[in-house]
Image (cartoon, rainbow, N blue to C red; front, side):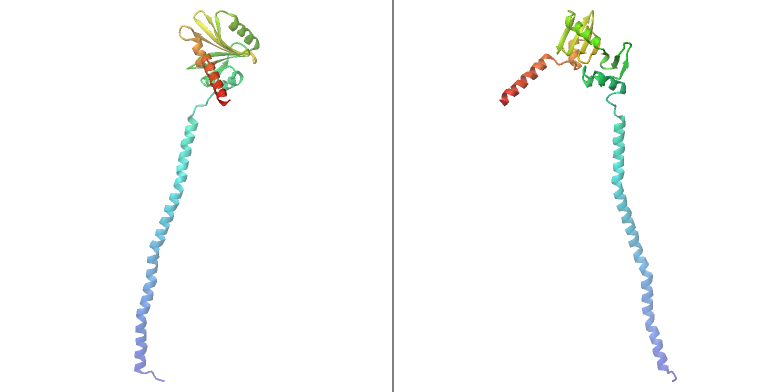
Length: 221
């Protein structure tokens, strides 16, 4: 069957009608990547920001740890090894605060003796000798030039004056230990020095503590 002019016209009109639809579809496909790219970039930026904010506390923690480590490393130890070794032997003669002021404690020329030195407290001699402990106790308790501020039998604290010098002495008869320091009587009161170093407790303090203890006991009764 031969085609008619009217049929060709209808077919041509059909193609013309499809042109806008194809153009619309083609335009939509080219615009789609343009709209999604900013979204992807923004998401990446947000993710990076979140990761940065999450790692910030770790950085701060590391800095804090470094500062604390620096403070710890620069702190001075309480005692050197030689002073600590002397303290373990002679701890009954003097409080730990005295040993903490020593820079060195070295063996002296006499057997079983040590010389300990500190810039603020001076030099002290320590003896680990039972015979010396016994003889020193006799000197403190029998010589007129000696004075005792504490005597419990096992422990004796006092000083002996020889000319312008005084020898401050602490004796532990149970352990056979002796502490001595020589000071100038013209410059230093030996009794005050003993209390200052914590080698003995002043009688007034002992009486006050005893009175307070007695009053506390009476109040409970």
